[in-house]
Amino acid sequence: MKIALTFIISAIVALFAFSLIAQNAERTVQLTWAAPVTRTDGAALPTNEIIGHEIDCTTGETASVGRVLTYQFSTSNFGEHSCSIVALATGNDAGDILRSDPVSANITITPPKSRPSPVSNFSGSTI
Image (cartoon, rainbow, N blue to C red):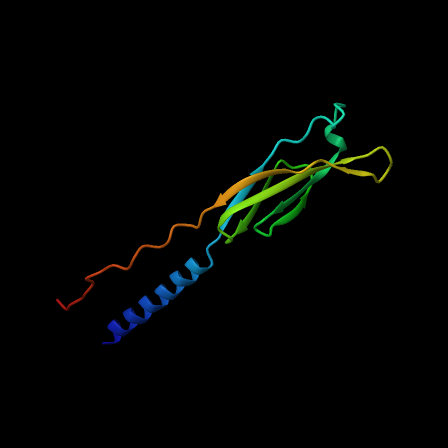
């Protein structure tokens, strides 16, 4: 009887843990882009004049990132979303920061696969 009770308690604890994992499921989103190489007037934009990028997504994610070309975040806000990014570059005067026009991308964040259904016809007996 003690072994059966231990097994039942272990099964309940395992089901509870699986339930918590499913409820807190998140997906990782990776955004990638190419940095601008010119200014809007056609002049070259040297890499060292790029300050960074600002990202804004309808998932609620916002970020200011440096001279990187990828950004990752985790979310459980599934469905159709949009993210936009602007490049930031130095201006003519010290401290001037010039912003590019925003560029947007639509993304679909799908929920992770759910766990399998419980086994059926499970039983035990003494042998």
